[in-house]
Image (cartoon, rainbow over all chains, first blue to last red; front, side, top):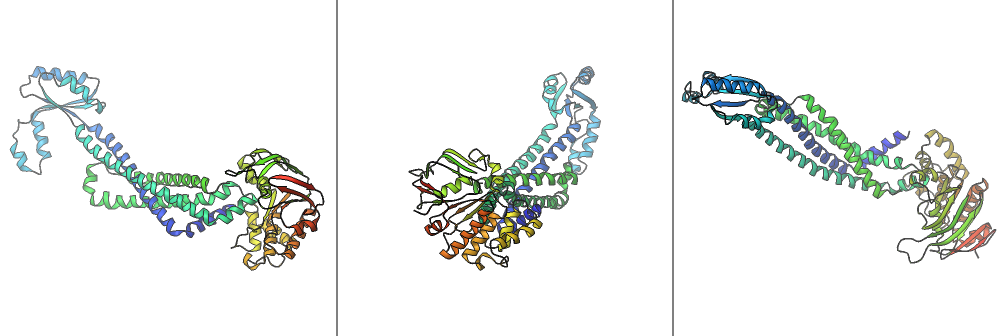
Length: 291
Length: 226
C-alpha cells in the first residue's frame, strides 16, 4: 500500500510539472551521453594501447658501412638485453619488399626508390614499450647504428587526440550536469511548494521523514533514469550511424568499439544519473522541508 | 502526563521571551485552558509540546518522555501519540472529509482496510455521519473543524492539543465543538486548549492557566476567564 502510494505520488509529481520534467530529462540525457561517450573513449584508448603496444617495434637502423662484426655484436647485445622481448633482422631487400607493398597504391613513390637504397635494420620488440628511453641511450651511440626510431611516438599522437576529445566530452558533461542539478533542485522546490499542505499534515500526524521525502527523491531519480536511457539510446545511434556508418574508415584503423562496451555504459549512466539526482533532491529537501 | 520545568523560550530577534521560566504540570485526563491576550506566549506552549520548537532553557516532558532531548528521527513516532487541532482547520481542500481523515492514517502506514473500518466510526463520533464524501468547501466552518477533530482523534492519541479551535467559529458552533472536545476528554484523553474565548472558558469551568507576558499569573481549577 505504502509503495503504491509513493509510486502514484511520483507519477502525479512528474505530470504536474511536465515541462520542467522534460527539461530535466533532456539536460540529464545530454550530460549522460557526454559522460558515456567519454567513458567509451577511455576504454577505447586502453584497448588500443593493449593492442598496439604488443605490436610496437623500435627500429634500429644501421649505417650503410656497418661491418659484419659490428652487426653480430649488436645483435648479440640486443638479444641478451633484459628489456628486449624479440629481435628481428630486416635486410635491405626485405625493407624494399615491405616498402613496395606498403606503397603499392602509389607506383610513383615505389619507382623513385631502388633496391638497396633502404637501410637494413633490427626490429626490436620491447617487453615494456614505455622503456624506449633506456634502449635509446644504450644503443644510439654504438658503432654502426644510424638512428633509432620509436613507433610509439606516432601512436601517442593519436592517443593525445582521443584524450583531448575525452576531456572535452567530460567538460561538456560536467557543465550540462550543473544545469541538470539546478533543474532538479528547482523542480523539487516547486513540487515541495505545491504539496506544502499535504506535507504539513503529514508532519503533524507523524508520518516518517523518509515517507514524506521519498516521493520527491524518487521523482528526481525517475527523471535521472529516463535521462540515462535516452542518453544510452543516443550513444547507440552514434555507434550505428557514425562509427559503423560515415566514420567507418576511421574506426577500421582504430580498434572497433564492440556492442558489449556500449552496453556497459547503460548501467554506468543509469547509476550516475540516479545517484546524482537523488543526492541533489535530498539536499534540496533538507532546505525546503524542514522536519 | 505533561511537565514543563522552568521553560524559557525567546524567539530569535525578539526583545523579550515568549515564555519566561514557566513551570506547570498537567495530569492524565485533565482538561486545561491556557488563556491570555495575543502575544502572551500561549501558542508557544503548543509548539513546544509538538516539538516544533525547542526551549532555550528548561525541560519539556510529554508522556514521561523528555521532548527537549529527543532525536529528530524519533519525532514522527512521538507525534503519533498527540492529536492536534488548529484555528484554520488545516484540511486538504482536494480531499473529502473521509479522505482527509484516512490520509492521516495512511501516511503513518495504516492499511486502507484499517481506514475503512476506523474512519466512518470516528466521523460518526464527531457528528458528521452522512457527510463523509463532502469536500471541505461543501462543509460549514464548524463541520470542517469536526473533520479536523476526527483526524486528530482517529489514532486515539493520549493528548489532544487545540490551538484556538473556535477562533474562526460563531458562538453557537463554538459550543458544539467544545461539547465534542469534552466528550473526547471523557474517554480519558488529556485535552490542552489555547484560547481567548471568554464565553467558552466560563461555561466549561475547567482548569484555567492564565499567561501574561510569558509568565503564569493564575492557575485555577474550575476557573473562569477572569
